[in-house]
Every structure is written in structure tokens, then in C-alpha cells.
Image (cartoon, rainbow, N blue to C red):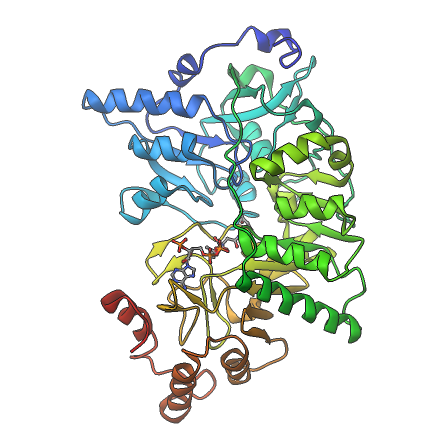
Length: 503
Ligand code: 0RQ
């Protein structure tokens, strides 16, 4: 305990998770640590869920507002959603219990660009923040905090919250000390200055988080691993998508639009992102950089084998094997990985300056290149927009990737009109499915439609899309972005009614 909590004043505020949870009141807005299942508080939220369940048992309503970095885990989102303890939640989430209640209409959920959360909190757009609950690796003798496996919005929650609860997790390796770069130079307009970062490997801040010690009302110890999931082995479809993208990068190098080392890469979450990273190694790329949000297993491998020289992110999302590998070679990874606040990892200014190549998954795209990253049939959210919009709008080039069909072919990922828009046609440069790649740069809407039908759509749906497009060209009032409005969402309606988009 002395090694992890070296500040005497804070050590004197040590208490149990139950005692700390008793400090939380109904209706509070609580900023919590956590990003893609890493670095979230593990003890206090569960104790709070028990307290909420007991209150509800007595017929007393008890729910709070929860703001995080991104997705957390069953011990936080899952436990509190199940207890009925969440009245409002932002931003990205991925817990099945929470998702079910959001889509059931019981929980208000606000989906926000991950790069916007900290500044919207600072501007006062999100209201008052009563409490921060932040996991840390250790507390130094002077009270500064060694961050955990994610940084997320922790700096902002610690700065803005009235009170702070710190969870010191003994399971997080002390070797994390020195891996973080916390930039304290962000301000409110009109007092902003350029952010002095010109390379993904630059360090522009300090390794530790700061907190006003008078605000810390509790220090709690925990000893539990992050939520760790397994990645599916790379299948044929993911391999094909990765193959098309790598071939496209080679083509761009030959055309002189990209150099041999490409530009800093951002890659999203999930199996396809992992496959693309593996594809880059097999494609012979070396000395690349990443300016991204999440370090997955694939990224560790690329750092290990020299494909990636340096990676900037805000969080880890590793499998059990990934965690073992990380702990085994933490000295190497500390030199190659920099974890930053998400307001920096996803900052429009930096993504644009560095010329980041964005590569993200999507739910569906339409004929004209609008992309839906979040909703099934326009009404049920999957996870949230995450950082995809920060990179799509501001990057050098934005690529969206998806198998051409979902649910065993019952759903086409390429539809006449998307049922929800996250990324407009203006923010989408390249679409990739296992069928091929549509390069939409410099094309008008009708030219984009032809490229998407011919290169991305599944052969089962290609004639249907072509037929829709031909009839829209004939019957649409306007011929700039031709549509048959009464029919544009009929594929989704058919899926809801019959279980398939096929007629
Ligand atoms: O559901 O498992 O129940 O079958 O969506 O789809 O194909 O496994 O793909 O894991 O890459 O996720 C868009 C969700 C894709 C993800 C999304 C169903 C499909 C399956 C998952 P099942 P896959 P992926 C940086 C960037 C937004 C955030 C982001 C995502 C499930 O990429 O959340 O980009 N992106 N962040 O069956 C109905 C369709 C569907 C569909 C797929 N057209 N209709 N269901 N599915 N397409 C990281 C962060 O920001 C943190």
C-alpha cells in the first residue's frame, strides 16, 4: 500500500468501496474513468450498484448521471444499468445490459464525438460535475497521480468535479509510470494557443495527472483486471477487406500521394481493424506511426515487429494474451506508446495537422457515401460514434470498412439511403468491403453511386441497388442526388417485417 499510495494525506483518506459509495447522492453527475474496457473504476461502481439496489428495495428512487471516456465494463455500466441506477449516460458504450436499457427507452443516452466531450464539459455544456471517480496506478509522494491503462477524460473530470474518489488498482503494472503524456495547455476560447504537437511521438505534457488534494474525499484500493475480450481469429472476409486496403495504399504510393511510410494511422475497434493491422505487416510496410485512440493486440504485434515505430493513443483494449505480452515487454512498449487525454488523441487540430488516415468500421453506407456507424434500422444504437467522426472529418483520408452483408446475408451494408447518418458524404473518402474498394475522392454523387454498386455491394444486392438507382435517375424530381423517397428506406422496413432485406 505504501508503494502505491505514497502521499500521507491521501493515505489517511483510505476507506472501503462501500464507505466511498455512501458519499454518492441520487441525481449526482459523476465523471468516471474508463475507455474501451480499460482503466475504469472497478470497486466503487459495484458498491454503488448494491447501494442503489437496496434503496430501490425500500422504494426510494436512486439514479445518477454518468459521464465517461468511452465504454467501460460489466462492473460499471453493466452493474449500474441492471440496478436501474443510470438516468443519463454519455458518450460511447458497449455493455449489453446498458445498451438494452438505452434501446428499451429507460436510460437517456447522448452520443458525442469522443474528441468533443472534454471541451463541452469545460464550456459548461454538460452541466455541473459533482464527482469524479478515477482509477489510477499509484499516488506519488507529492500527490500527483500515475494514470492507469486509459487516460480518457480523467484530466477534465479531476479538474471540473467538486469532489474526487480515487481508486488505486494494485493489478495495474507500475511499469505504466512514464507512458502517459498529460497536456495541461487546453483552454477556453478566446484564450486558446496552438497545441505544440507535430509528430505522433512528441511529448508535450507531463507523465502525471494533477488533482486538488482538498477535493479528494476518498481513496479506495482495488485489485482486479481490466475487462479483456478475445479477438476472433482473422477470417476470410476481414482478410479480404484488409487486402483491398493494403493494395490501395500501395497504389497511392505509386501515384505519389502517399510516401512509403504512409501517414499516421488511426484504426477503430473490432476484428476488422485487427485484420487490417496484420495486413500492413504482411504487406511489407515498416516504420509506420499511429495516431489513434485504442491500442489493440494487433498494434502491440506491429510495434514488436517494427511495422509501427511509435503509437499515440488514449487507451488499451487487449486480450488476455495481449495483457501478458504487454506486461512482459513493458519497457519496450513504454518507449513506443504514448497515452494522452482523449481531447488530444482525437483533437481536430492535430488529426488535421498530422494528416491521419482514418480506418473505421461501419454499420451501413448508402449509394451516395453517407455512413451510419451506430444504429440498426435507424432506431437501435449499437455502441456510439466513438472517435470515428473526429478522424473522418479532420483526417487526410477517411476509410470505412464493413463486410458487404450482415446477419448471414439478410442485411446489405450498402443500401439506397442510410437509416441514420453519422458521417455525411462529405467526410467519407473510401469504402471497403470484401467485394472491393470504392474510391470516392473527387466524385459527384452519381459517380459515387456507380463506384459503390460496382465495387462494394454484395452480388446478391448489386442488381437491386442498380435497379433502385436506374429508377431514381428516371423518376426522381432532382437528378443531383436521385432518390425515390417513398422507397428509400424500404429495405430496412422489409428487414423489420420479414427478417431479410431481400424481396
Ligand atoms: O452484431 O454480433 O450481434 O451479429 O453489428 O458488427 O461486423 O462484427 O463489426 O465489430 O467492426 O463493428 C460499426 C458496430 C462494427 C463498430 C461497428 C452488426 C453485426 C454485429 C458488429 P452481432 P461486426 P465490428 C474508434 C472508432 C463506431 C465507433 C467507431 C462501431 C455487430 O465499428 O461501433 O468507429 N463503430 N469508433 O451483425 C444491422 C447492419 C449491420 C449490423 C453490422 N448493417 N445492420 N446490424 N451489424 N452491420 C474506437 C472508439 O471510438 C472507441
